[in-house]
Image 1 (tube, rainbow, N blue to C red):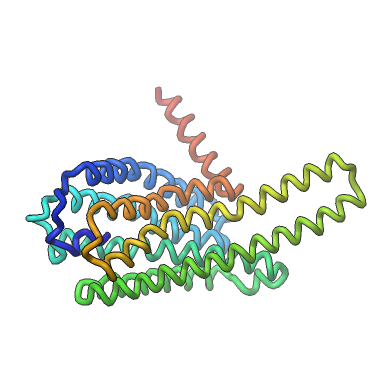
Image 2: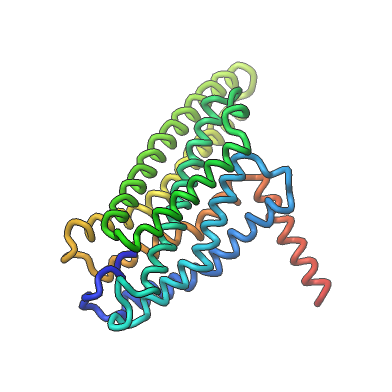
Length: 298
């Protein structure tokens, strides 16, 4: 994200690291577009899926889809443009920076909101329907988009200051996700112990052992979202810090942090296919229908 800000970078844009990074981004484009289009198509064709949680998921899918359509191609274009022709003030570089801040910011904040939504659904199970309505979920998603539009446009005038603000939001989102996913894990473990005790009283040892295994898997799976979030965004946070504190140590090889960041937009839809049965079934229905139609045409 930051390579366009340093026009005196000594490394050639065509060095091996840049080529590998560009190839990786090019491979992510069809994966990112396909996965997120399927999520949005599934929700569009199934009004019953439009719950508050799915509204947040749709906001995430839109931001991730735009990463595939816009941010990734622009990233490749900037990377493969000779440094003599691209600088921090060039339109191409500014467009890339604005889109990255906008789209990845929305994606990160929405994933954080989804983690909070999960925590509320577990901790306030009976009160949750009144706490999180479709209207509130829509307002939350709209707030994220508006805030990031303003933040990303301001970066044209105050790059360092806005990048610092973006870093603060990144750290705040990672911290909030850490707290909420830890709380979710504790709740799931508590439920596991409760169900374990009930199972001992009414069922055989065999079924009890199966329940224990299922609950352990559910508790472990909770952290997969969090692990992916940290693995994809933490390198970018480190890249930010290095550029802002020790610019002389930042070089173009840190652009791999951008590729890892964009990778999150390709991973997200498949995580939700795996964990959300309703979305998964709706997507599989669309895929089967499309395959049957193709077979009939052939």
